[in-house]
Length: 93
Image 1 (cartoon, rainbow, N blue to C red):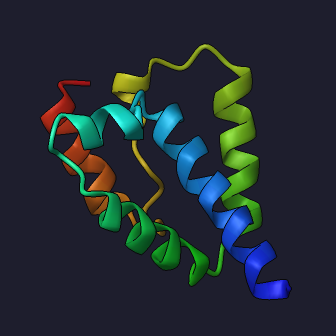
Image 2 (cartoon, rainbow, N blue to C red; image 1 turned 90 degrees about the vertical axis):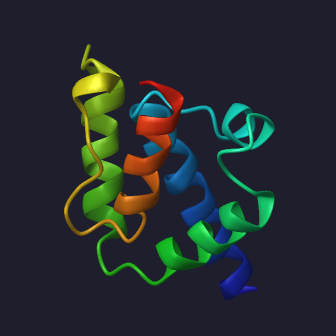
């Protein structure tokens, strides 16, 4: 049960980070920039992160402010930073 909870937590973090960067994962998949399997792999990478609390706190700040998603990048420690950066480039964010 703990593993399922961990995956749900990190799926939510990955989705929130994507949104904070101005990305819609569903639209990215439809446009062919992201395979649905890559989303699963991204969540698994996220679940191996040592900084989920720091990430959640940073996301809360981004979500509460008026940050321009085009100016926001995933944190250096983010295991999906390269993927999210690629999606921003492909999506024109």
